[in-house]
Length: 170
Image (tube, rainbow, N blue to C red; front, top):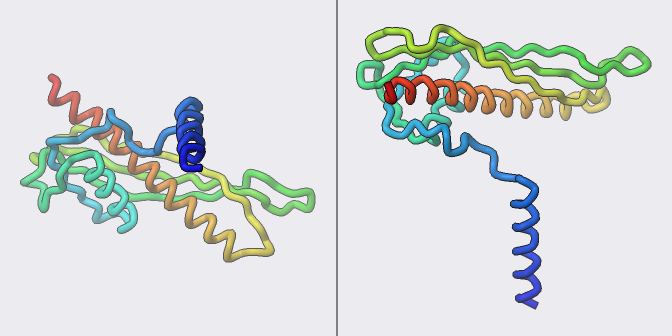
């Protein structure tokens, strides 16, 4: 019986690997190993700062206590979330909403020289609206906003990685 279970597990793992599935994450190309970053998030929400700092640590970089001790200063300039209806029912009620999450940032050296001028990362997602379950719908919207925030932080860190490693290679 144990041999059959092992064979089934191996077959499942091979099937998952064959279809191209892999764990979600920054991947091997987004390593910030050896860099020290300071995150200035005075203009952003605490959730954004948490997502970005978690991503920085995951990428292998260290977080500095102040800008003077850092190789680069990541300044989070703010975030916005916009909602618009994308699907309307026959009785003119919204069935689906699209959330657009924007995160503005810039990257400076510890001396204040600009490495990345102010830019915006934009990600979108769709959730279904149920007028009979307003609390559940709000929970869906909040979950989607959190996922979009994490995706934006990941994209921001890929951009930071590209700029910082280009500077090291030159």
